[in-house]
Image (cartoon, rainbow, N blue to C red; front, side, top):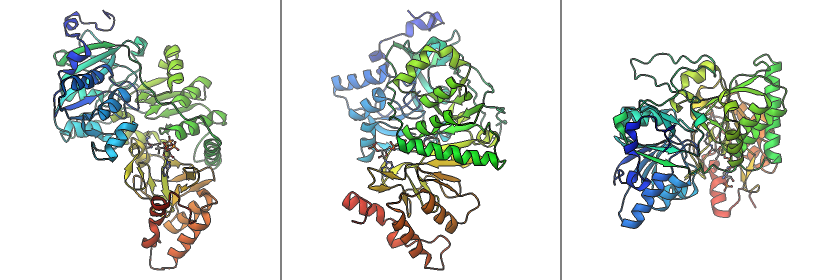
Length: 500
Ligand code: COA
C-alpha cells in the first residue's frame, strides 16, 4: 500500500476511504485546501463530501479557502451542490462564478500574497480542516506537495486537522521541486534571501506535525486542467508589439538582451503573448512568476528561458502529459514556492520583475479592470496581478482592443471597476499598438492610449469623449461624468457599445 509514499508506518492506520475522511468536515467549518489555478488540488474527498450530502440530505455550508482556482471536482461540484457559504481568494469555475454572481456564495477577491497573512492573523477564522494533495508523506509526517504549493504551508500550520490526499497520478519525481520558506511574523521578519530566481532557500516538504494528520486518502484522479484557446492572430500581434517594445527598451539601454525576470499572467491571451517570445532575439531569460502554463514549458524546452520560479504548474492536458514525461528535466529548471514568496513585494521589487498581465478593460487614463464584467459581474479575480503590478520594475497590461466580436471596446472612457490604478500601470499593449505611459500626465496618457491602443471602430468616439471632457478647463483628469460609464450602460441596454 503505497509504502514509498507513506513513509512512516504508524500513519498507515490513518488511511481511509474518501467518505470516511469527508465525515471530518461539518457544517459551518472553514476548510482550506491545496490547489492553485486548477492544479494540485484535492479531488477524492471533496467529491465524497458532495456524495455524502446527497445521500443524507444534510444542509452543509462551508467556507472554502484555497491558494487560487481549483478544478471542477472541488469548486464545480461544491457550487452545484450548494455547499459553499464563502469562497476566497480566486476562482475560474463556471458554476462557482454563477453562484457568486447570483449571490449564493460570498466571495473575497484577494491579492494572493495576502492570503497567508490574513490566515495567520486570524481574519479568516480558525482553519478547522486542511485538505492537501501530496505525492508523499515523509517519515517525520511532513508533506511533499504535488503540482502546486500555493498557501498549503500556512494552511497546514494553522489547521486543527489535516487530511492528506496522496495522488498516485502525480509523479513521485515531483519530490524536490518545491522550496518551502515561511517568513516569521513582524517584528521578527527577516529579509527573504532570494537574490536570483533560482535561489533555493527552504525545505522540499511542507512541515506538518505528525499528530495533525487525521486521515490519509489514496487516489489517482488527475487534475482537471483548463484547455487554453488556440493562439489567434490578435494574440500574435499583441505578442509582436510586446517584443518590439522590449527591443526598444534594449536599444535605449534600460534593459539588456537578457531582459529581467519575467512574470506572466493567466489565461489564453497571457499564454499566447508569452509564447511569442520564442520568436524573439532575447536570450537566457529567467522567469519569476506565479503559474507555469504551456508556453513557459515551450520556452524552457527551446532554451530561450533558462529557469522558472512559480507556485504551480498549470499546463493544458497535453502540456501536463509533456511535463510528466520529462519531469526530471523540468525539475532542474523549475522551483515551486509558497505564494507568499512567489508573489512577495520584497522579492518582486528586488529582482526587478517585468510583469505581463491581461486586462478586461483599460480606461483612457491608464486604470485597469481585470476582474469585473460591466462593473459588477465577477469574472475570475485579481489573482496575483496586483502583487506583481504594484511592485514591478516594468508593469505591462495586454488586451485585445475589442471583445465579444467587436461589440465591446476594451479601451473605455472610465473603467467600470478598478483593480490596478494609473499609478501602477506603466504600459498598455493591444494588437493596435503600444502606449508607454511612464512619465506622462493624465492628459498625455489619454491621447497616447486612444491613438495607440484603441480599435479604429471606437477611436473617433473615444476622441469625441476626450475632447469634450477637455473643454472643461478646470479638470486635472478630464471626464464628463454623465458620459463616463455610458458605454457600459449602452452595452447593457443594446448588447453593443456602438452608437447605432
Ligand atoms: N468586456 C466584457 N467581456 C470581456 C471583456 C470586456 N472588456 N474582455 C474580455 N471579456 C471576456 C471574453 O469575451 C471572454 O469571455 P468568454 O469566456 O465568455 O469567452 C472572457 O472575458 C475571457 O477573455 P479572453 O479574451 O478569453 O482572455 P483570457 O482567457 O486571457 O482571460 C482575464 C483574461 C483578464 C479574464 C484573465 O487574464 C484574468 O482572470 N486575469 C486576472 C487575474 C490575473 O491577472 N492573474 C495573473 C496573476 S499571475
